[in-house]
Image (cartoon, rainbow, N blue to C red; front, side, top):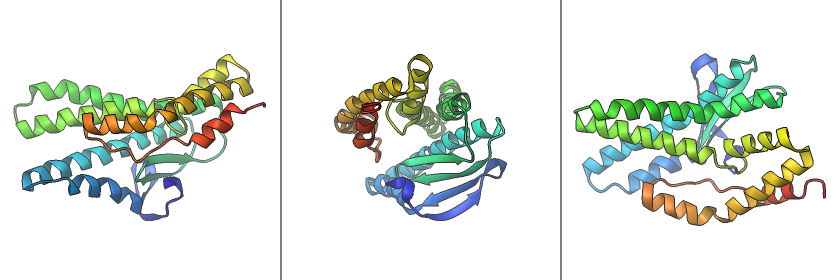
Length: 218
């Protein structure tokens, strides 16, 4: 759904990569700002949303770097209400895909580690709060994106890993069955994440895609 959104704004990011913004991205700040009760809470929600969107952008820039360092041109980065994606040009080998895909979560884990190390030594309460939440946001994004469902990074890495061990049809079917099970568990998982972390997920794995994968070779 979000991948077909029409960009409403574009700017040049690092390495000259076009970064496009869709109108659906406004769903994230509108939701969090609507939950604000008072000016102080509004301030913290604005900072939180800024850190969340910035972390999503850095995640996608990690994918872009993984492509560019291998000489693969990047067509664009698109940010939307469900997150974002990095689109590169040309065909890639499975080994090239592994680095491109892995670099997104790696960037989030690096930010988590850096913020976690710095935060305890910060005396200013506002800055300490921001660093702690920046760490938690990026740890969550890393874990979330590594879940083995399509089209998340974890789903694609899991499929590539299975291709190292099994024939293509069997590997695809196995990845599909894992995706089906996790997709059926997704809704209660979304509710749990909201009440425990305050994070709202607009992404739901495509059940039909995973079911089609299970039929590979049938």
